[in-house]
Length: 91
Image (cartoon, rainbow, N blue to C red; front, side, top):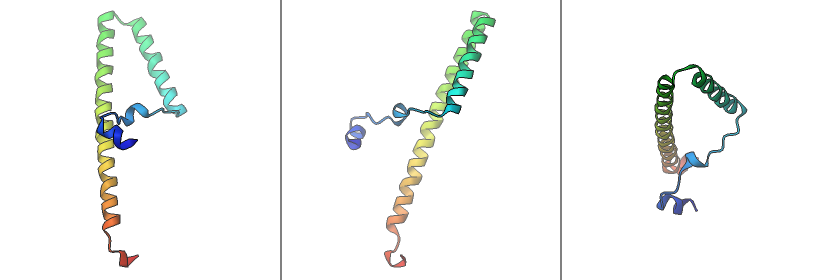
């Protein structure tokens, strides 16, 4: 149940996502291919820096996703407050 998941801290929408968008898969494959090419061409120290930069970018995207999710949830809750708080005689 969703309330139990929330209570026990196991509600993680990002882990339940299973994107099946072909465009996303294509982009991810291009990233993998590009990293493989860089790994072959760059000295180890330079490629390590690329990997570190990619990790930082991933962390940044994750934080932005969490903020977007939170903001979207707040907007949805405010919409519900507005809908249920309206004067019923105007309907």
